Image (cartoon, rainbow, N blue to C red):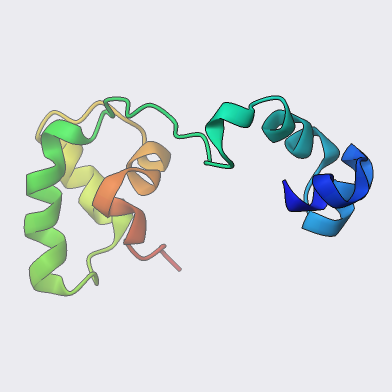
Length: 99
């Protein structure tokens, strides 16, 4: 907002702030937000009901358990998501990639 106040231009403010002029416009049009970032709503994930089991595997192995191996085991326990979804969800997101 300071960059916009200084320049009066969305494009110039975006250039100064290092973001898109569309982003500047978004915040200029919402003065009541006070510069706060938008928060996305928390949504349930496929992995949610299996998080405790994944943590049981990850914690003792200090994160050395491979995601592809853990995914196969999780599918056997009823997980319906893909390996890609598994890698990007929750605590499994820090599992090492296979070589």
